[in-house]
Amino acid sequence: MNVRVTAAVGIAALALTQLPFDRLVRLHVWARWALALGIASELAAAACLFYYLGHIHLRRLDMARAVRDGDGGAIDEIWAGGGKLWRQYGWAFRVGTGLMALGIASIPVAVAALLKLVG
Image (cartoon, rainbow, N blue to C red):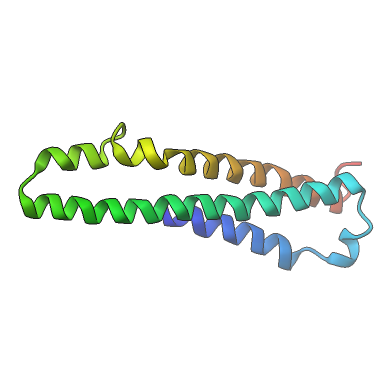
């Protein structure tokens, strides 16, 4: 999960720092919008995935308490795929993954326009 957050921030950072802005300004409007959409999607994905990751950490603490108290049934409810964690915060994982895919699809469109591979 940490890798996804790092990847989303890294992709956005690469797009912001490594593309020549003097050439980006001369791109078609649709290509600039694709780049902006991609960067915004990657940053929003990182935020959603980080939010989910924070709640995973809190659930691990809950599980440690359950182990300490000898309540094995609570561990299954906290962590299992249909458990409390996924029911409450699974949306952040799904939205973050979707936004990351959108960014990964949008940024190359702008790069292709920059390289004059598309009109």
